[in-house]
Picture 1 (cartoon, rainbow, N blue to C red):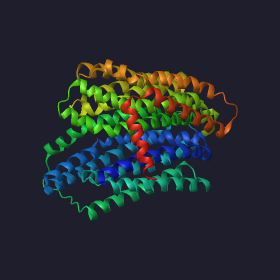
Picture 2: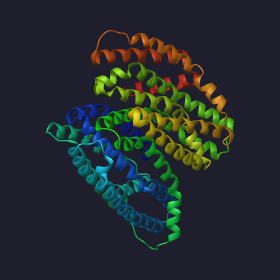
Picture 3: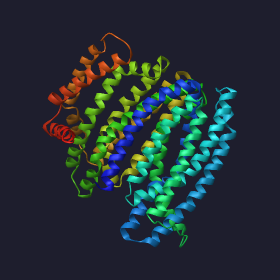
Picture 4: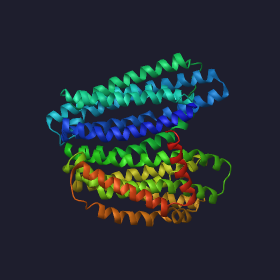
Length: 501
């Protein structure tokens, strides 16, 4: 099996591990450190995540340039590029340390709803995480080098090992009386180990050399010019997933931050299931676009990918709307009701962008990503502003409502852009997307409504409902919702799995 196929497999394995272990660990962590401390932990994590965008998209840029120099067999150019990038990272590390220092001295003024002990804890965590971030960004460049060399297995395997070790160690530390600070220290120690291992692999196994042959301001501008749109999308991601924590951190008690954090986490998991499907098809968009495929041909491919994602997403969305409240109550407690609502709102708003994920690759192939980047950044800012206003009275629910307004506006504008500029037939896309699938999903939802009345409580009752609903959804969607092409994919996938046993 090639590095590419192994890397893809490890990537999907990482997604599954992240989601499953996250779902298992979260209630355990909350039960051990409490709602308030978990809220402090998520708030500090969001602040650090916001500062991390100062990477300016350089890690992705390293992948692109190293791959280019490898293809050209230009070792001298590669050495000079890597040396230049590492010098840029030195500047970034100093910038992060400076920004972090300013943040540190204003934490008390920012977290106005925290107690003195919570402020003291947040300051300790913040200092450690700033150090962690300062070494992580330049350290991440070595992972980028591995990707540029198409050596995917080592860094992805290392990341999986780190995640498994971290999970076991968190359980051990919290059983021994550790707190959120213990988790932060553990993450930093593991991060140092990962960076040192990556450096060893790059220098000793890949025989990479870093040497500054010539400093060029024009070359630095070229590097940053390529990374700018990656940086803009990083800002979009920050506003999309972390800005709410930052806003709420200044006006809400830690318990509200914990509720918001759990809701955001569940909502973010929703996209991972769709990405695992659409990601397999995305390279084809580039080939089709480069081959000057017509708008109708691209629309047809977008429909094929979108329908597969839509079936999976509708299953998760309908199941979560029916049984999600029971799951959240069993998982983290009844005081996290708003987390279920927040996650459900995210899923509803996120569905259309996810089923149109194929459009991203089309934009990239046609070099049209800049429009989407600027549009998203603009309305994420607007949505965050609206959310901040609503949060003063409605708390976490107000914050997510404002953010989602920005998402919805962006997606409507993007559909006009797809139709008018990219020449995709958006009307045909939606017509064929919902064909058969939506009526079946509504039918199964009605059946699920009755399943939800099965008497009983606890995890056994929840699992029984989930199994019954899953069987109904899968069988009816296969019989009534799928077209022949989709049935063939389903049968081939099942046959491939069974042939291995």
